Length: 412
Image (cartoon, rainbow, N blue to C red; front, side, top):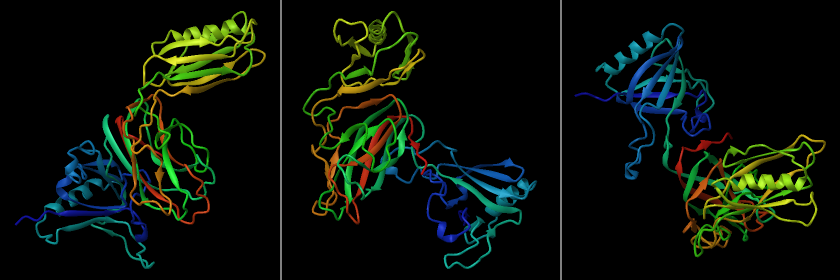
């Protein structure tokens, strides 16, 4: 009877550290045991290391979702060895796998532990004298490539928030540019011991630190306006100059990631501002860019009102910079009308998570229309009630679904 051989690897030296992901990026387990049949190939990485390329170790872990978790061959494992002895190690491993006299079914290939759970010193275990250590173990558990992606994370809310609208926790991923948000949900896993606790979920172009004022757009919560009872509208923005443009000033900005042609001061400030507006209005993503006439002067127009061309599609504008000349004013961008109207979340409320609320209460993005994001997208939970003074705050589960590239894992 043929017995499937299982290979064991552990890359930590202290047994109590054998507890999950060694590199904090979500796909480097500290130990693993897999069948020898999962090996796709063995190859020399350097004079002192070998790479085992593995078939997808997690492809069948959740068969009910009927989707692949990664490309074949992405999973891999490094075996470090004595310099110049890589071939001998590969040969010995092949023999150990095929040797039917090894009947217990388990081969400890590389176990780096030298301190056990009791703190005692133990000897590291290697199947061959030329194996020196276990290198990085890589097993992907998030979808790779462009397509539909889903992500779930549990967040303990920061209990020190002392004002509405402060960030109390963020997802450890960011979406890459050109992603489309499809749906999301938040649920209360553990209640706070403070009576006044509720949260909503925002998305934004940058990360925001805990206890700072939340930025971006509310996607799930009482303030989410992404469709619902209303209809998607065209977004409206204002570009406002703090002062007049002066001789030799230049103006630059980007729209949806593409730089506008640089505008240089021409005749007077109002004429130059009008030229900037005209260039914006010529873009297909913008329906109109109108200068607000402040009066009869030549240097008093400060505001350009920009309206997007398509209902429900935001216009990504950034990098507004005034340079050169004897002095430089500043230009600020604000959004005056969101591209969406109507409350969308189901229910149309923040997620209650206080001591008197209901565990496992859930708020979904509901009727939110898909949202195109030209730049990176970060997600943060924000408090909707002052919950400072809590000794144990709420634990919130956050689910998001998007179309586009795989997410980026943020450094801890």
